[in-house]
Length: 388
View 1 (cartoon, one colour):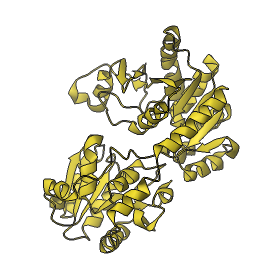
View 2 (cartoon, rainbow, N blue to C red):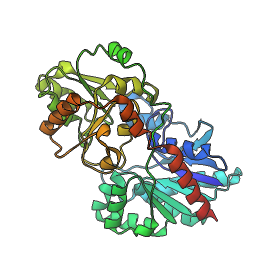
View 3 (cartoon, rainbow, N blue to C red):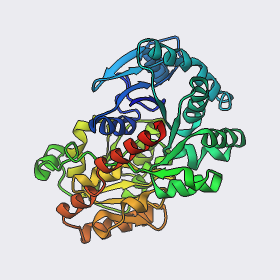
View 4 (cartoon, rainbow, N blue to C red):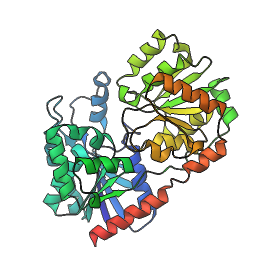
């Protein structure tokens, strides 16, 4: 089988963590053998590569083609119209990507199926490409693309049209599948295939050494993710004010980083919040292992991989009750789900989890129930059925 993965969520040399969950899924699917894949991962067009232009300059520096883990990745450029272009983006994305798909066919990769990730704009654009190239289409929903974007009328209409055209749609959690049904996607077309966790990459290192390297001598929380208000690091920072002696490790970067640093100083906890910036996946295990609890106070989620990564390192989680969180934090040893997304509730949960900490071996064993092999096998079987 020859599969074309189409998504704007895919790592590249300038953004090595961007959409890494899509790459991880594809790598595990290919590990089963019998499938060849190429990736078309468009990036926004921008004319300048200089540093002062921030993330847009990074887009400009992304190469037109790349190879990651033996998989060829093409990065066509598409126009982005800030603020007013939301309804136009799927068309611009499809138009910019069509030459890349034609090139792949000319070069001998006549793909059998298009596998798109993120429903809007990626899945809508992929639907147009699938019509043009007369190929089966699978679209995977990830979270915000279904939890938030369908609240806008035009994108909702386009999402439903793409879902109607698709031969199958995938949700990464039962909660997301339920939301898909509520917006009008037929349940019979939805397959639930959750993400797994890489048990080798997220294996617990020596906890004492990890804590010593960070200079930790008291309880610690860790929050991993993009620094955005929707991810809730501000809730964790506010909770720290009610947790004397605790340290909060904040891993990631994003638009609200400066605001969070200002908040920590204003609350008088600046000396106990460590902003560690973006950290390579290979180095996350030692940070998870050093913490007593992992925190995710998001407003919305699909299937938050960071919870499984933390648990695989032996660290239980505290998370807001959104998306597939209850499907992950589904046993006492996994951690706690917040009844309310408030600093007070988070502080109380942190104290409770520290007082009755589950054995770290049991926490890891829970995470390893979510293995990639089962999901990858199910997705390969889906491909086979649709191509047949």
